[in-house]
Amino acid sequence: MRKRIQKKQKEPRHQQSISQRKKKYAAFEGYLFIAPWILGFLFFQIGPMLFSFIMSFTGWKMINVPQFVGLKNYENIFFHDEIFITSIQVTLKYVFFSVTLSLVVSLMLALLLNSKLKGMYLFRTLFYIPSVVSGVALSLVWVWFLNGDFGILNFILSAIGIQGPDWLGDPSYALWSLIMMSVFGVGGTMVIFLAGLQNIPQYLYESAMIDGANGFQKFYKVTLPILSPTILFNMITMIIGAFRTFTQVYIITDGSGGPLNATMLYALYLYKKAFKYMEMGYASALAWILFAIILVLTLIIFKFSKYWVYYEAEQEKR
Image 1 (cartoon, rainbow, N blue to C red):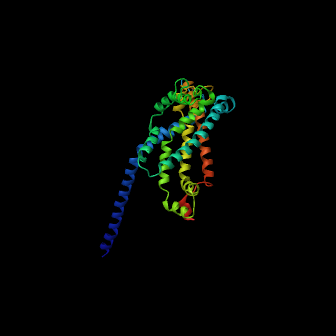
Image 2: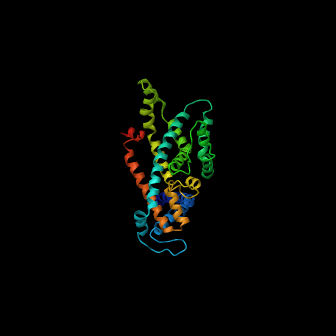
Image 3: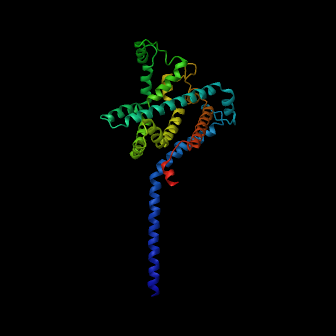
């Protein structure tokens, strides 16, 4: 009798042991599958970030041994670098206008392309294509399009009696040309807005219609609140992308940021310090300042998002 009881006690332990081994094996398989990503993240993301943070406190110029200089790089950037101030001003202006205009244009396009008309898929594809074209190729097309002597834009303006300016050679128009280029590539943002619009329940519009709401009231009272999380997402990603804009300005200004530093975006200035003047320590400090600016700006936007972003799931819990 006692032997039978002992045998019954042993069987569950044995099964439990097998179950634990299966769980450990499954966990091992999981870690094995994500190991390439973890290694890539550590070696190509975290590693370079830590390295650049350390280098930001050195006077490293790539051809010499890094020498620790403390906060001197940061002191020079904030108190003795006039181009840094210019690049911050130019970048903030570019970010504000490019993000605002791109958000408005992409939302308007999404509203237009959300209708169920024949051939709408073709128009959606046509508006999305510029966002998948190489930045270099697109920038070269814009250089030709905006050329002050033989550009298409000035040719069109001359046809209606307007003398077009030198878009890329005049400091008053160069940055606006860059902003115009950024608005042209809103296809990706438009697709995200389109997905958000198609997830809005139709019964909300039907209820608004029964209450006598007109088209603007339905847009203001139904579409915008439901779409506000999508707007927040697009806003954050576009701001981060705008701060990192480099290819377009490098191509259209031949890497100079001209004329007269009118298009000296922060990313271009950082690149010039790092690879043209070989001041890697200084460029690393610039990179961390850019990181801090984006982080603070993102946190501020998230902090105030509770006043205008509507989350339907949270409202249902209340």
